[in-house]
Image (tube, rainbow, N blue to C red; front, side):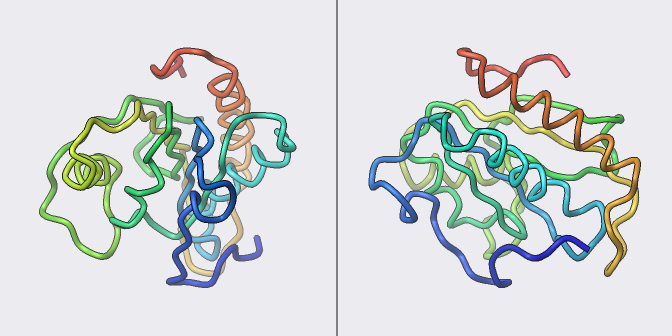
Length: 176
């Protein structure tokens, strides 16, 4: 089983962990490391962090889910890559631009990326940075199971794509 990151319910803004000036790129993955393939977002972030070794102008953040507080992590960014596991994505992964949209209203738990961008607009009164979603195909999300072999293969393809995203100068999604 993949070990947990931060304790459940603990929120720390990426901007407050390091420099008061945020790095231009943010890679943010979410998911539950105790639920099989749901761990793909945080594990992808972990692998990218290790591969970059601090050489890129990028900040890495992972959590169990997106929450309204995460809108503050987008402040000052030039681009954001969101990473999550998905049962509906085509294998090995899908990418798409994320646009702000109102959902059923802000709550303290589990926002989709579109709603998070709307929170950003509502709070900051400005357009959010360009955001891309990397949805990695998962198959098994049962509590207490490790990631599936297929999901781990999809993860490797997603990591390679995300490295290209990091190197790309444009804010728009690269083809999957």
